Amino acid sequence: MLAKFRKKVAPYWQLYVFLILPVAYILIFAYWPMFGLQIAFKKFTIVKGVWGSPWVGFKNFTKFFNAYQFESVLTNTLTLSLYSIFAAFPFPIIFALLLNTVENLRWKKTVQTITYMPHFISTVVLVGMLMQIFHPMVGLYGKAMQTINGEMPADLFANPNAFPHLYVWSGVWQQFGYNSIIYVAALTSVSGELHEAAEVDGANRWQRVLHIDFPALLPTIVIMLILRTGSVMSIGFEKTYLMQNSLNLSSSEIISTFVYKKGLGAGSANDYSYSTAIGMFNSVVNLILISVVNWISRRVGDTSLW
Image 1 (tube, helix red, strand yellow):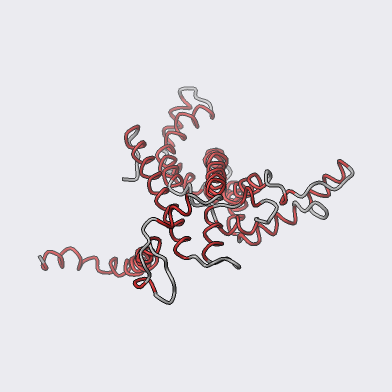
Image 2: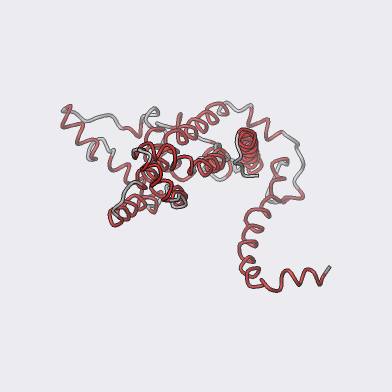
């Protein structure tokens, strides 16, 4: 057994050495924290520690389900997430298909560089830009509306109905170029002979995109959609929290910000067990969703994660 193991590993020992860091990273930051999930079923106190804290069963979960904020927090989370999927998911695909039609290589690279750049803007800077642009008095939005209407417009950041649109479409602008990379890479595998044969048969550019490029992207689209579905309940905390204020709280309070406020927020009771239970509920729902969507994809077509 040992001899067989050495025979398989020894020739490729350098590759196994490279695996040490990523495996250690996953073990330390992905698996080891699962040890702390047990406090979701306990009344955790720092003094007694994880092992010394008494068990309370599903009390923390029922507390969350019975909370008056449960319905609004869950609704806001699902609204923002589904809105993001329907609005943002098609843009990288469309952009990749359009970019693939560009024959001028220099122009193509220039467009790619410009559209990739917003991805590298930090969340804090992005929210700061939004606040400046949409400021009702000195922002571009405010100046434009003052010119048109002759009066200062309402503050969009104080409007709960405007929050989802600001959140989602700023995300579309920031990420669509960078997210198109994987689709652009998938299109490079399409044989040029297919396009040449289609041209000979009289197919125009739109027909070639529809019948050659899009089918080539379809497996990648399905995989990316499955992965995205697995994070439906996980909306980015930083951007939401930075855009949040007391006036738009009715539409901006989501599970991740709710967990933070209950566990670590200023003035909270620092109920670590309660916040852990909410986070665990969030993860379990994501796991169920990604499993269901993957099962449907496997039954309907040939593409799935497992």
